[in-house]
Length: 131
Image 1 (tube, helix red, strand yellow):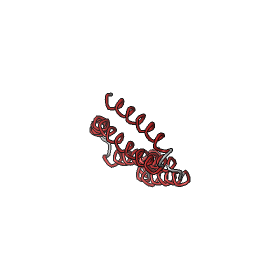
Image 2 (cartoon, helix red, strand yellow):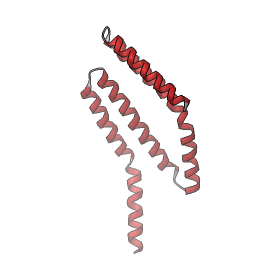
Image 3 (cartoon, one colour):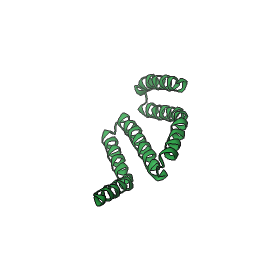
Image 4 (cartoon, one colour):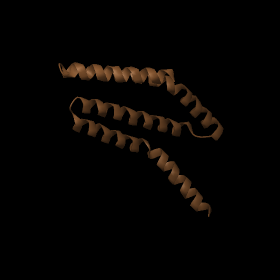
């Protein structure tokens, strides 16, 4: 929980400094925001360890296929990175570019999900074939 509070402090400090510097130099303000995002992303990694261990435990207990959990993690990562990149673009004045990053992130998550949908379709066909 300590990492969370550090991330909040970094984000508030970055926001204040960006607001002050943004009046003088917008480029430095955007770079400061990006640096704050990178630092907070570093804090975020600390929370991923227990989540990954839990998913590994879930995989072994539930006899799940590892590639499906991998797809889930990739989809979450792409969604988060797309959102961060879109916010940075919007902050720098490129709202249209930010929206396009969100769009491509969504499409890539759908593309990644094809094996999951295919497995679901196979399961439905198996169930219907047994009836």
